[in-house]
Image (cartoon, rainbow, N blue to C red):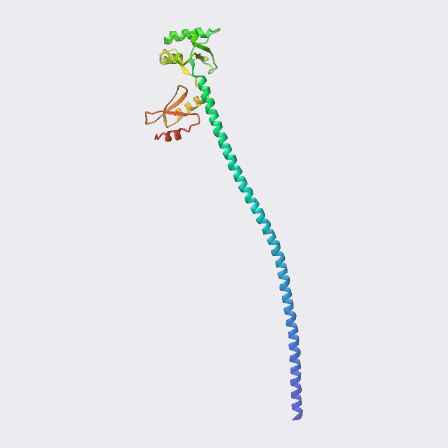
Length: 252
């Protein structure tokens, strides 16, 4: 009986010792595993910090570049706006200069008359011929003192070259131009016309082609148009947009 008790006691001690060893071994293993896990997490954290730092540096660099690009874009927009304003002002100045040049050119021609359909001869006495022509065909007497200059100018191929007549003043011109219808109806294919600038001729052509204009004409240095469905007239300039000019005058 005593022997059984000793064996039992010895077994308990052995089990206790074994359990203690197992606990010790497990504790060591758990500690090692914990340290390994902590080291792994620490390593991962360090790698993350490095990568995050690189990403942040890249982001900061991109942010800086982005801000610089924004500033450049704003500077470019301001420069474009400035240049556009300069271009607009230059365009307006150019238009104004061309309008003034056209006006001055037309004004310089205010005493000019073009005569079409006069047969050309050798060694022409232009002053005498024109004076005689006007006297004979229209009944208007024009003296040599009232003629400033007269000569042929280039014309259409196959036709007689027109005559450009410059008279002393607008009174002499008006006296002659009043007889335009008489000369036109003479049956000799001769006619009188104003000496209109190229730009004003182009303006007349635009007006005559417009569906909004019933009639267009030149008078006393300016070009006029009569819109359809009205008896009024509008004075047009070389850069006018026809429909906009009519709308401003409340024509429909």
